[in-house]
Length: 153
Image: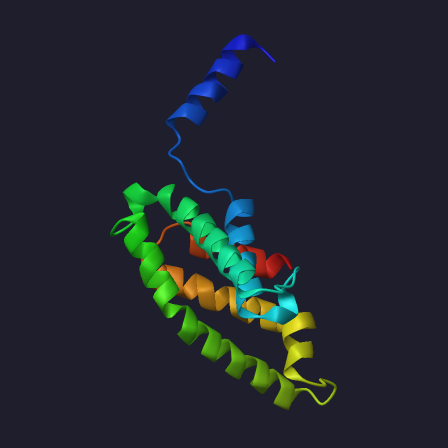
């Protein structure tokens, strides 16, 4: 590649604002889903302190994502993180209802654990519910990244 083209690309990178990568956003939401549903967790927590530490790690990931959007948020990254996390219990409640509805509607489903663990429709609903909350909080980029992620899985 010619040097002027490389410089042009370099300038484009420097002028583009900081935005979280799709991989970072998806990893953050997967971390949240693992906390909400043991059926999706990739690890176990023999002690409450380990669980608390993992919660803090997931919160830090979320905060890191939001700080990259700070100039585009209606408030600070901290305020947005707090508002989003305050909605997590309600999102969890709704998702449990969604899993129950899927279970009732599918005679082959054995239990809600199976629905949560293995039904792509449940995963899509979970991701969409989180995307909706980010949209409601007027967070840019993340809702679109998440909905595209849900489509691809």
